[in-house]
Image (cartoon, rainbow, N blue to C red; front, side):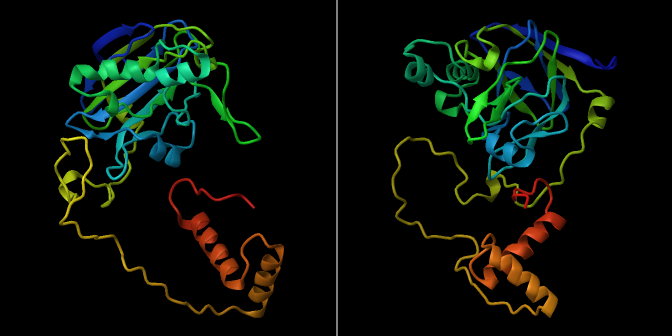
Length: 309
């Protein structure tokens, strides 16, 4: 641990529990193994606007299924901002594929009508700040060893974290950080045993900040001032707005034909690609595929999300 860090808070969360922690920009949360092989589920909210919260899908899209040191925890659309940065990870087996376990899951799979579970633990920890069970979101699963089988099915593998292993998260905004001891003791998640986790909050050092290059701000990282409806809906029932008028982006969509000149060599290559049947049924479809996949490979920022031919 850097010697110039100031320890602000330190607690141990026991099996079946979690803790909501107020964190300010520039503070670091360490989640550490006490005995080893324990998964930690994690929720995160903008401390000043709980409607901005961590999103597994956007994080998975930008960093893959196993985010680690150097990656960010992103908020959900339409906000899509980096909320926290992973600045240390001594294990490297994190997961943003599996959803949180729930009471339903244990009843459905195991016939256990009453069982500790991550959704209920998160809901109880978040209740300290006035949030409801509906506000719990899909979790970042630290120290959870997962993968995809050859037939396309996800699986949970043996937990490899050892006593003393840890992850560290640097807050890039003021957040409510909510870690919990995963409640799945009858699954592979934590090697069929629940163990405590140690939480420590520090003031970040210059060395911590040096590990992070914050992504550039985009104009489409939106805030409530940009919404057509700015207030939070207070009632649960849905009903039609009689004054509603559709206002979709770029509608009506216009499609224009573009003439592309190809020389004999390029036409021959296009014909060979078309003959494979892999890239489209017409020359136009094949050319579209070739152009866009070339552009993605050369110019698109971040992961490409196209198959390797």
